[in-house]
Image (cartoon, rainbow, N blue to C red):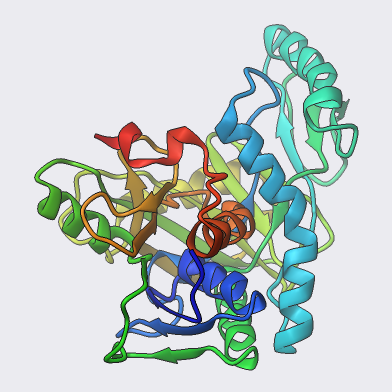
Length: 344
């Protein structure tokens, strides 16, 4: 299929990434979102672009690796076109090793990473550092594939890049929008489930916090199931909760206070850091837990890109590319587990 015009519904990270890829291939693009860019989950604060462990390789992990690998070039191009800093850096990640069994497992994974990560990145066991990341074994996992992104800066930069390539970002759809992409987040998953009469996915609440602590030259830390992400603007993001039962998706509560307390315990340098912001919102999770990509099962010339959940920013560079291939050329490079069949 080829086209000269496409309407993308949703100005979150997936919708904007697809619009960017289409525009770079010469397509005229309208991005429609009544709330503007990054109004939903893409307006969060954490921004951990972290890989799955390098073992039990599958198509989802391979796709994620390709996207994380593409990320540096993708965000550099966005920064160059937009003139704005998306807050991207391949900062790496540290993880404490808790016991001897975990140490043996980490050493084994360092070997598989050499192959699975194509010799481009490393998963290493290193001595505990000197800036406060404690480890019962005195050892840490350090990987240099993990990167960070500042979600709000990134969506602002990508939206500006879309505009500078000639794309329009509007609150209302044009009259002629025969070819469509629906990248409409948690609300879109609920609407899709209702229209198909089956559960395709839904929103999962997350809470996160932003602290005033300048660790911009340090790697991020994953400890006690928390992502602790130093950003380049002198803040540190902490997240997040995963909540399926909640009264208000946008209200923070005691669950976040517990997250902040755990982070302060895990990384004492944060003990006195002021909380600048508390954030809560719904992140779209498809039933399969993988992104949901492909043609709408019941509507011609309509495509779905949803379910980014916690990995949307990390997956976005590759999602934009494969969706453009599908929409424009009919070339399907999307993993089978990302399709509708895996979610029915």
